[in-house]
Image 1 (cartoon, rainbow, N blue to C red):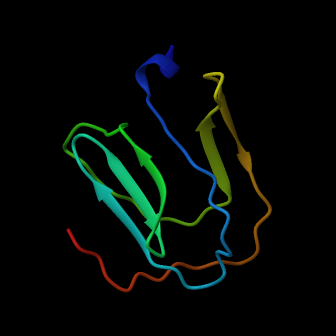
Image 2 (cartoon, rainbow, N blue to C red; image 1 turned 45 degrees about the vertical axis):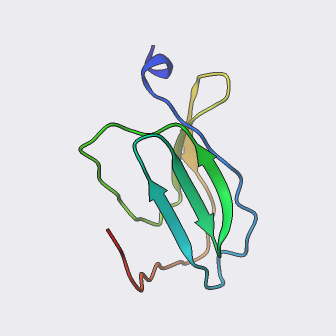
Length: 90
């Protein structure tokens, strides 16, 4: 079963995504930390093994594992959107 192979952690993000924000991701071997505007939104020991990649996208489609280990997918109604990246540090 795929849910035994795939590890995932998540957190609800309750911000106005139409406003400018500073996002940061500290991607380490032992843990990951995701911040928005300096506030830690998610800290998790779930960390994929290298080699790693990062993809940015905006989409109205989703696919995610439910807490029960089932795959859920679909589309959401979204207004027009865009993504601007000011800087990226490696």
